[in-house]
Length: 363
Image (cartoon, rainbow, N blue to C red; front, side, top):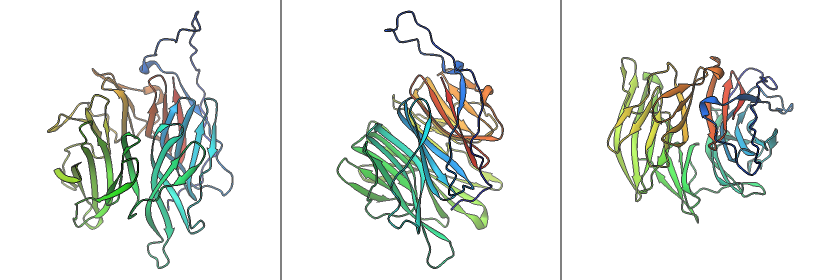
């Protein structure tokens, strides 16, 4: 359960939205340079009851710019909104099986079509013998075009943080101590072979390539020593391979790849982010951008020459294959941009300001 200060109802900014003109209406307007987008803030009508101490949308995905979903967590469980091209409206999905004693917490979303969308996260439930106050279990919700339904995973365990897929019949999700694979018929669980002294944080990066190899970044933490360990592993044909590891602690900060998130471009090139953006050449990682003085949180794009990166202190970056561009016109130092979604013509950006959410729309 996450707690925070009382939330404001909405955050509103005003911007002029550029309009395309074309004499021949049958001809699509030219695609705009992403660095010339005009931005506006889309307002959200947050529910008044129960009163929310915190509303943080953490992930976003759309099948088009007129069908975009954003979801995350509140003081009282998960919440979701859908954008229809004009406004954001709340989406309601089923309560957990033990409603009143458990609640969903959504972390990541991925879809293939308007009638095939997945959201992964945690199902928290009250611990009958605290502490701790709440215990977590894996959660997957699926939308079939009509309603959201819980997916029954085999051998559920801790929270799920990431989802990646290259088709509806090849889906991977990564959690606290395992990954699960869906082959279009059934899910199968594969425990992650890491057993050190730390508390398991889980899969922080998850992606794959066309050859059938899946890559993860995995994290554990030892609070007593303020020590975090990161592991870079590959998974292929049901077999794990440990590729590298790193330690972050006082006086020993090893930066070997981006620990926060992974992404693979359509060409098959893999990227990761943390304090920098890294690129994998098949055998080693290298930094490909200058430091921007902010922790980075996510990376996505449409190609190797059209990449978007979110981060703290209002950081939103674009890479065109040659140089990096920072969106100074939406650089608000009190905002953490956590994720973005794009369709090649427009970008939606999710950010946190304190314990509240802001949604920006660039086109």
